[in-house]
Length: 221
Ligand SMILES: NC(=O)c1ccc[n+]([C@@H]2O[C@H](COP(=O)([O-])OP(=O)(O)OC[C@H]3O[C@@H](n4cnc5c(N)ncnc54)[C@H](OP(=O)(O)O)[C@@H]3O)[C@@H](O)[C@H]2O)c1
Image (tube, rainbow, N blue to C red):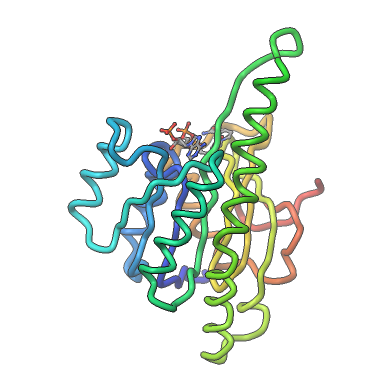
C-alpha cells in the first residue's frame, strides 16, 4: 500500500466531524506531516474548543481562520500559510468544509440552494485557487527531488466515500475530490477517514478528472 508522504497538509472545516478526524489521524501517522494547518470558521468560538485542545497537545498543528464563503478569509489564510512555510510548498490541501441542507422539492428554496453552492462549490474553488501557488511549489519541489512526473502532477478526481463527501487536493500538488454516494451504507467517520487517507497516496495523474470509490477504483459519473 502506498504511504502518505506529505510534509504539510491543510484541512478546511477541521473543528468537527470528518475534518477533525482527518487532523487526528494525520497526527497519528508514523510519518506524520510536520505541519498540519487545521482551519475553521471561528477558531475563538466554542465550536473550535475540541480542536484547540487537540492542537495544544500536538506540535505542528496550527489553527487558522478560514471561511470558504468569504473570499477575503480564504486569501488571508493562504497568506498566513505562505508565510509559515517560508518558501516551501503545501503538499496536500483537503477541502472538507461544507454544509448539507436536507430538503425536498417541496421545501427547497433558491436561497438555501445558493448557500450550499456558495459554500461547497464556489468555496472549494476559491480555496483551491488561493492555495494553488503553494501546491505548484510543492509539485516543483517533488520534481527537483527526482520524483516521477506523475507524482509531481496536479490531479483532480472525485471519490465516493460512502456517506462521506469531501473535496481534496493532494500531495505534490495532486487534487482529489470526495463526494457522497446515495444508497451506500453509512461509514463511521473513523473508517471513512482511514480509507480516504489510504486512498490518497495511491492516486496518480491517470486518475485526473475521474470519480473513484474509497478503494481508488474508477466509477462512472
Ligand atoms: N458525514 C456525511 O455523511 C456527509 C454526507 C454528505 C456530505 N458530507 C460532507 O462532508 C464534509 C464533512 O462532513 P462532516 O460530516 O464532517 O460535516 P459536519 O460535521 O457538518 O462539519 C462540517 C464542517 O464544515 C465547516 N463549515 C461549514 N461551512 C463552512 C464555511 N463556510 N467555511 C468553513 N468551514 C465551514 C463546519 O464548521 P462550523 O463548525 O463552523 O459549522 C464544520 O467544521 C462536508 O463537506 C459535508 O457536507 C458529509
